[in-house]
Image (cartoon, rainbow, N blue to C red):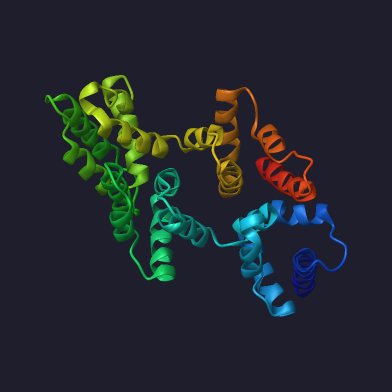
Length: 322
């Protein structure tokens, strides 16, 4: 047991030496070993690496990467890989609210693709880090109909315990049907109320029940003209909860100034969850793969080509993790 522990400590010390060479610029940097660290280490191992780095060099390796991540995609990828997931998501959420203009896509990404149990941890971490309630900040910063819908999803994670109740799901599916179909207008209050009271697993069960009862997806009902903008906004959120891999694939297909950041963030945050499903959804719409997207976006002949090659190898390695 002691020998195994020693070998483990020796391995993390070696990892730290590689990271130190990269961060300090001293010594020869072995790019492949650097890539291997960020592709193959687990969240628990990164915790040990952070502790080992602090013991060896008296510095917080996360802070070192954080300080240079804005203009260095390797540092950005390293930071997102090494930080605790709930810390990462709380920080991403904070930046989407206070990093300039509000980034609704990123807010939806965190609120609607994370299971309710994880979302509850993210909210607790957000409160601890920023001395503020996430719901209060969403209320203050978000405008339009998405505010109510996002607040409902954020409130719903309080009910993250317990098993899925299929009987309740059937009743809720009927409630949704009545809210959309029974009158000239949509009963928005009932839909929002239901979203705020059911966790993500229960919402998925409701959507399955809805299709069983009525022969089509709830999102199809929301396409009616009387649903208007509210219907379009709820549809986005529902689809995100129901099929997160399709949401991520759509994000990857968007062309904007944040394309590289989105690519890095999605591959890293989904690498140990559903990146293969995201890749399938992406391929179904584009006929291509995330690997080819990475090669294209990080393939250039600029002075940063070495940095871009390292990032590309990290991301491609993560897409192939089982």
